[in-house]
Length: 141
Image (cartoon, rainbow, N blue to C red; front, side, top):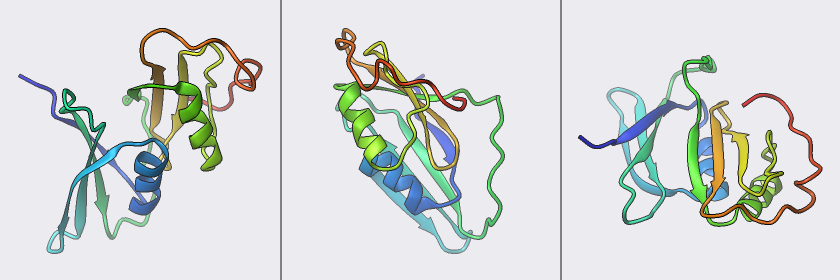
């Protein structure tokens, strides 16, 4: 058995692709648009050759109401090469850093649809530094 993907329903596909691809750095693996069913499936992955897992963004074209976020879903987690650089890129893109990487190791942000995304520094934590060291947490993740 091997893990394949996690499916996330998204309200605004363009906003979600901006967050996951442009800001977070995931790679577009494939996209399938189903005219008869009026939905699209977009698969994203890390791009690492030894990482076959992906997330599937499901966009139902005619769904006008935001999806409810339940506590049954915890978060997505990604190892990153430089947590400070990723958080800077996300913040510059308008993403609120909910749990800053004060420890040089872990941060939390949310996607445009409210899914929690954990960022973990690959390898050893980076040396603690400002502005992250003194930045307070905000919201929930």
